[in-house]
Image (tube, rainbow, N blue to C red; front, side, top):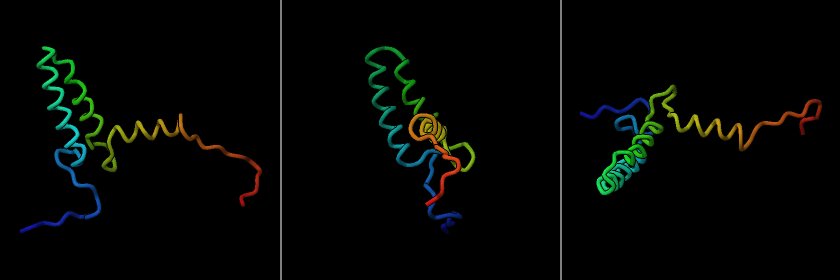
Length: 90
């Protein structure tokens, strides 16, 4: 028996990560575990851990911390809104 999800258009999640993010996290973990074993340090493992923390979808509306950081960046740096008072809309 297969149970259909409520919304078939929403992104598929596994362990609160999208499939693409899970693949990237897996590749990062493998690469940095090999690198950490050669350097004899656990500090390089902070890179995949940070990626997973930023990409895990636990916030409201199924969003993640990375999306909120990008939204703030876009507002503050890239494209602040400009309002011109008294001009006609055409």
